[in-house]
Image (tube, rainbow, N blue to C red):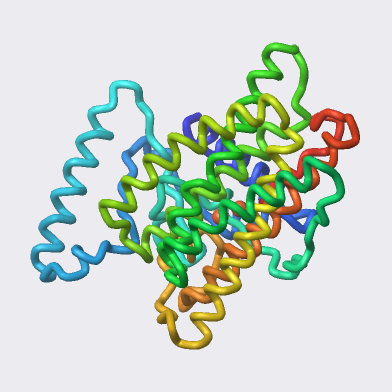
Length: 332
Ligand SMILES: [Fe+2]
Ligand SMILES: [Fe+2]
């Protein structure tokens, strides 16, 4: 019975993946997804895994100490799970190569191959007053960023991703509350915007593996988040069309920044280091992927966010509600 229950959970997840993770709109067979990740469970046992990529400090530890700390971690994680009165456990999930799935923050059915053929040059020409306000706002916001970070694209990307993950969450949350208040379906837009927020957060989790934030950068993030969250929250209530247009232009700037980042990698100004393990698994990159591959897929994601937000703003400009147009689920 338990085998069956676990099996159905996995199958359901695989089906969700087939629906959600296919940005090309092509049908992905559940069988293929099953091939990608094999979940084995049914023994009701605990699940233990650790991050594939050791931190810098861990990498410097001698082998014996690593083993020792690994054993300690394993023991403490086991005891947490074994002592669970609630019987909560995750089935063991394996990768295609048979190794254990190492992440708890995302599952294989949430991973995807980036659509790199997306047009990076698309631009929404400001047509009316609100468009121009949005465009100017973003251009003005870019000035302090340029001054502060200049060509330190690693730090710049890390800091900007802490901001980029906010609008989707605020928009998704407000649409969620609206749906409750009005007893109306959201047309999938709540999920679409939350997917975008999650995707942006994964950009940040990746950048953090490459750039270690300094104390004053962490402080800056606190201040910026405090201001930006509240400002965007109020703006989204007052004018969702302006809010989405601003995000659309912010995404256009993000594409530009990542293009400059790639130029610096090509010129050798930034070392093309191996890709972090989290990025390899999240974007299904080859094992020998490099920083350049990671930045390329992140840039493609930003182009998708650009499209989603300009599209959302266009819907509002037509005097319609988002729920009246199909939500771009799985398009992030
Ligand atoms: Fe991003
Ligand atoms: Fe983005």
